[in-house]
Amino acid sequence: MFLILYFSMIFILISNMLMFICMIISKKSFLDREKCSPFECGFDPKSIARIPFSLHFFLITMIFLIFDIEIGLIFPIIPLFKLVNFILWFKISIFFILILLLGIYHEWNQNMLNWSN
Image (cartoon, rainbow, N blue to C red; front, side, top):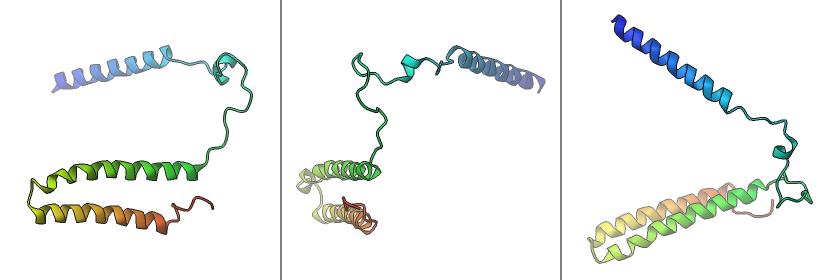
């Protein structure tokens, strides 16, 4: 019993020491002006590097990527038409397309597909 307790204390002590040493070694200096400034091919930047980002554009991009990946998942269903039972293929295809349509309906309901707000 004491042997297990002894080894667990040693493991905890060693892991804490390693974490502390890593924290000290990897200490970054945020006071360096050159490291904090944006890099633009060695020249001083002509404009502000931190421009406001359109969240709506990001959401439209995510919707596009999700539906693009889903179209990639639909392509393997087409050659399976000749290899599997038609009823099974039809049920799986309808189920998958129904999920896609429900996703588009939800995004349309949330006004995510309107570009101008």
